[in-house]
Amino acid sequence: MTVSSRPNILVLMVDQLNGKLFPDGPAEFLHAPNLKKLAARSWRFSNNYTASPLCAPGRASFMSGQLPRRTRVYDNAAEFGSDIPTFAHHLRRAGYQTCLSGKMHFVGPDQLHGFEERLTTDIYPADFGWTPDYRKPGERIDWWYHNMGSVTGAGVAETSNQMEYDDAVAYEATRKIYDLSRGLDPRPWCLTASFTHPHDPYVARKKYWDLYNDCDHLLPEVPDLGYENQDNHSKRIFDANDWRSFDITERDIKRSRQAYFANISYLDDKIGEILQTLEDTRQEAIIIFCSDHGDMLGERGLWFKMSFFEGSSRVPMMIAAPQMAPGLQTTPVSNIDVCPTVCDLAGVSMDEVMEWTTGQSLVPMGQGVERTEPVAMEYAAEASYAPMVSLRYGKWKFNRCTLDPDQLFDLETDPHELTNLAEEPAHQGTRLTLSAKADARWDLAAFDADVRKSQARRWVVYEALRKGGYYPWDHQPLRNASEQYMRNHMDLNVLEENKRFPRGE
Image (tube, rainbow, N blue to C red; front, side, top):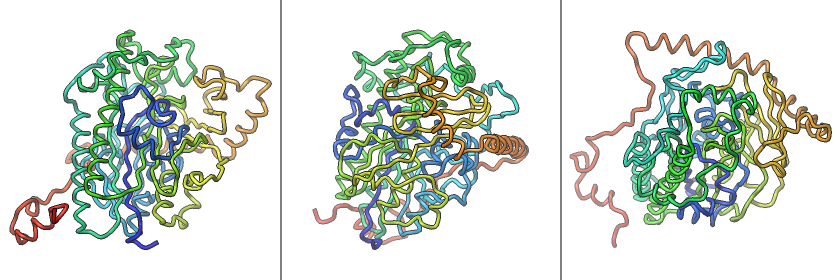
């Protein structure tokens, strides 16, 4: 495949979108016409999972096709190594323009990771300030840990920190698509537009809020189980979220979920703007839609992410590409499959690093090839005291942590994961099979040691770098004002001709 014949690629990423709301595209009750239109022409993956239910580790894995154990991005303050190839590197090496508008939560001085251009800064810090500390189990770091104020403070606002950001993400993405349409650069392109909604705080514009005033889904299917009835890790999440300092009412729950649904509709409008611009500029592109992780939305009493329960770990994914006929795929897959899938769709080889890449291309599945490998997840960030791992294999989910009893759930008969079958005599064969697969994949003692080493190093480095003069790592978008709009760098007639699309109409 020549460079000129390679397809353009548009990646649409959102943040903290619960995959249970996408059983086959957006749920019927969601006001999301643009996403529903995209779903109708997409290969839809109803059992797609994050690599890790937290922003930075989940996104590094999404970009690279590797789990956190290999990327070493264990938490939201762990550096993503510049030597780890991402799909942006692979495509750029093969002759693509690569561009990012929005969030990717890269930590460290490298804020591009293969993207030739980044149109916005990130919404989250790029330094080591959000580092957890396994040496202090149970410690809550108030200034950056989640708390339940996102729930008690849910409601309406016409602007917010996150709205300001996502408005800019959409604007810069559409502006870039217009620029690409002018044809001044003959290379194929890959544009990633990555939003921060519907991530909490649960605050939405009134026009979207009002869409859900009569919604029948404002209460979770599984109410709060009570702290004493939670599993060990869920208790750690409750404690990390400072639950004892808040009185969560039914009104709070309803308002939080209403705002969350409203922000899906807000995102739908923003994505619609991008897709309409693509259509208006007569450009074609493969489109991939996904999220970094989910949100528990009050199920079992849990909020946000940080767990392997379905609401937190299952995320939507839809791919509209000529090589994959529209339809529903129920076989479990992972966000780590995005990198090899993108390269496969673009006709770009990953052979040199596939030995160290866990993700697999999804293109063969779209052509009827069966997939039998289990889907793996890892978590080693806040609210954990030791690394946790999970396998989704067929209808089964198997969770393991050295601090806790094993968990085994049958997701067909128990979709809410209320019955742990790990100790049931009738299911010991399944447990032993999945235990063997987990043992073959993970050395949890070595995993724990590496996480602790990483955390200890970062605490030293962060404290040192904040003393005296401080040079930030946060991405600073560059704008050469002397070559924007109308200046003396170019003949006026040439400028106007180059900037117009279409010409001659």
